Image 1 (cartoon, rainbow, N blue to C red):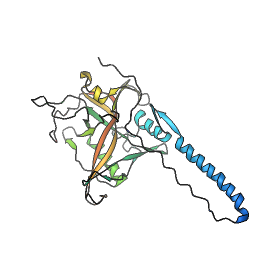
Image 2 (cartoon, rainbow, N blue to C red):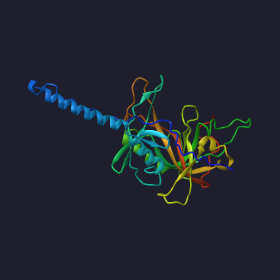
Image 3 (cartoon, one colour):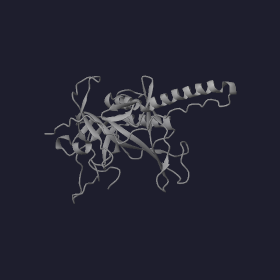
Image 4 (cartoon, rainbow, N blue to C red):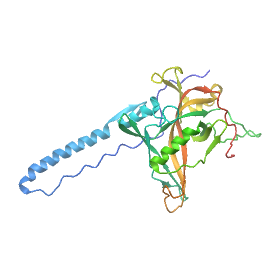
Length: 308
């Protein structure tokens, strides 16, 4: 029997930076002497008002599942994690989210450039930034084949990565949002297409080392509840849950991911969109909201694209 963990905290790997405060224009310093005292008093008062406004914006924090974050970020976290709004898949054709252009940095001395994507959600006219997106997926926690000598064919499976299955249409929609928001065309590298089921498998990374929280699994309390009344309970990390035989199945729900992209280019010149380069997307699973187990998807039991 598997016991639920009633801890309702969500442990995230990182948070986006505080919103940037617009630079306040400085008052004109060239004033006539007879107005200098009054004018300087006005400047001082205006400066105090500006400082209070900036301080209020910077210090307006909110609590979200044990995390103290800026209020707008908390709003976006509730929108994406709790309310499961504007995720890619079945919910709505065009999620109200914008993918923001990533500043690429070179990976060591190689010609590989990488950057993390972030996202701006339109929540009833309020634009809130967040480092995560949600997608309708199936997460594969089934056991995998091992070599005859007892070594796993899929090194690190269930610990540092898992297969995530999603519709081709869902992935294509994500790619179109990347193109619109960043200008980058996205390659198919790292994906495995199954034409019989019209599904795509991606290798989703997971944090499994100290210092970075492991992804958590939340199960629906009532699978028959309406979308407005749906609630979830945390049962543990993906790594822990995958060790219990009753949970070693394919779980259907909404996966929440951090997304980064890599571009192979010249080591001395940063690549830019539209010059023959393509970006490879990398998904890191940070949380899973699951409706339950599905038997409608056949799991991958070995590595179809590469051998370890």
